[in-house]
Image (cartoon, rainbow, N blue to C red; front, side, top):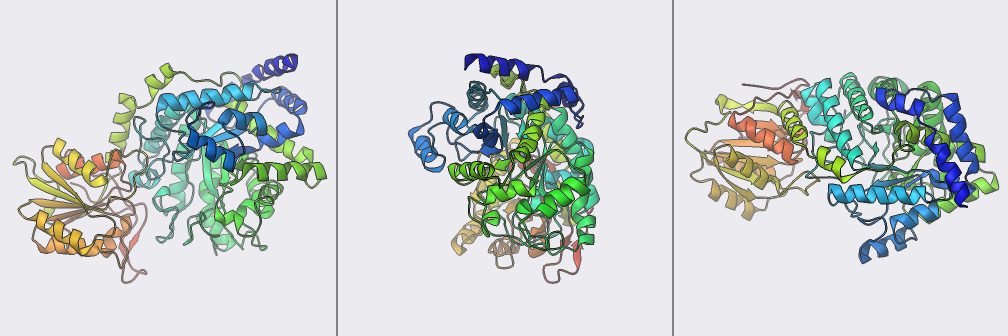
Length: 602
């Protein structure tokens, strides 16, 4: 047994030359035939159980690979059937692990690095040692699993507002360097969905915008930024999740684009990603009848994944499912059928099944029975191993605290994020030249508004963060949280607190036709105190508000974007953003209130 492990590891260490070249260029350089033969030899030494395991990317609870808290043990036993990450790797031979904040994987950078190293040690201690591909969703903006002291850069729609390919590439490079330093080598970003539907409940500001060609350019820029810094990028969600009014976490969305509309609206960013050498593409749990008349979810659709993605678009990289725990992929089939159908459709990596033992055993039985051939799963395993080789994981799977300290949250990275954020902040309204506010007389400000649940990258409620940033810039600013649905009492408190102030800053969040945030803004405006609104998420809020004198779109409520908004209010930075989506009139959506490309400056 020991001799087998040693021989296998020696073979792994030889799979380096073409992989190193590919990692250095960031382009999908074909692996040499000799390297492919070595990887195929490695596959031939795997047991069937090990082969099946390579297809799975699982969550696991705990901050340590070997010594989790008791609560983590209970969760792991219930959902996975193991106690620890090391046991997960040993029993199910998984090819990857995904990190989540709620799974207690991402407490701090040193802990993350240690967890990554522990997982890799478990993978390399097996009879057939193979490094793991560790992944996470670090899109930035409103979706991030790792917060401070890591650098949080502006999210996709903010970068769309900036419109700079170099900024998009630079942001991805910063993110990738920090992820790689912590042992995370696959990021489920960038989002390639074109957000043409303002009512989209799940994509929104996670998209670069509504212009397919502009989105395509920024997607390609981020692919290059991530991959040239040693992290596999993952464009998502194929074939395009931008025009839905259903969240696939909770239901099965249907997109009624014609084939021609899909080619024009949804396909360009994915084509651009493939041309840029994208390492992996994530599927969408959506139905698109024009692409698959059988109306299978795209994740389970052979016409979409094999017919279009593989054959028509010519993509031969890794295809990863969106989470198999989402309702969108579970509405038609049971959890034992979904992973089998996903493989038959053309997927390679099976991400985060709700109950790993059920999914793993279902695939094993499907191969044993001949429903799926062993040759078919070996095709997927070869793609996965090629990616691991390209990333250099066979040569050096481990990271160090020294590397974390040099890289994560470095002064250069933080300054880069701040400068990019200034170029994304968008000024939509500035009546009478209210902004920038004059700081010379140290005016008194009140900051009120929504304090939505904090994503990683926030140190506290947005009202408090924005007030603190304004105070640091020379104002006297007090914070008062009124919430996303302010009550009459909260609105009364805000109106009373506004008395004697020189201006009120209101953070708004997804303002609807019935939202009491509208009442908050109008009543504050009626006091005569100038009101400045800051859209903390979707830029569409302005269409449903009245009475404000100035409006900024920040596209997220992470600290980096709130600090940039404060600097714009104070005149320390000029607003550089332009709307990457149109804002329609609330009373007549056929009419555009602010077109794409709109933005003021001073």
